Amino acid sequence: MKIVIGSDHAGTQLKSYLVDIAQKLGHQVNDIGTFGSQSADYPDIAYTAACQVTTGLADTAVLICGTGIGMSLAANKVKGIRAAVCWNQQTAELARKHNDANILCLGARIMGKQACKKIMETFLSAVPSSQDRHGRRVAKIMNIEERICTGEDK
Ligand code: RB5
Image 1 (tube, rainbow, N blue to C red):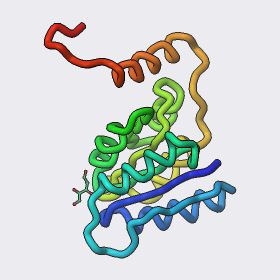
Image 2: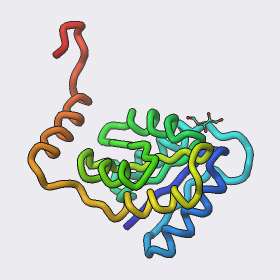
Image 3: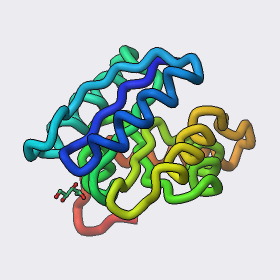
C-alpha cells in the first residue's frame, strides 16, 4: 500500500517509529515531515497528505499531532476525506469497517508508541464492510459535502 505519513512537531518521534514499522510491513511510505523539533502547523501537513489521498498519490495517510484532533479536523475539510482519530484497535477496525475512513489520526501526547503501532497495523489491514447499511451511511457523509445549510435543514 502507498502510505503518506505526516506529523507536526508533537509527533515527529512517533512518526519516525511508525514509518519504520510500515516499511517493515512492506508498505511504500512517503514521509512528508515535519522533521526536527521546530514548531510546525498541523493544518499544512494535513492538507498535503489529504490531497495525496484524494488524488490517488497515496492509498491512505497516517497523521500525527499532539492529540490527533487537529489533524483530523483539518484533513476532514478536504473533499473526499474521512479522517478518524483512533485510540485503540477496536476504533481503528471500526473506522475502516463501518466508516470507510481513509486517514488515520493519532495523538502522540496521549498515546503510547506500542498502542499506536497496533492501531496502525489494525487500520491498515481492516477493510470496509460490504453491508448495505454501512455503504449507505458513508454515502450520506459524503453527500453532506455537496449541501449548503439554509437554517431549515434536516
Ligand atoms: C501542538 O502544540 C498541538 O496543539 C497539536 O499537536 C495538536 O494536538 C492539535 O490538535
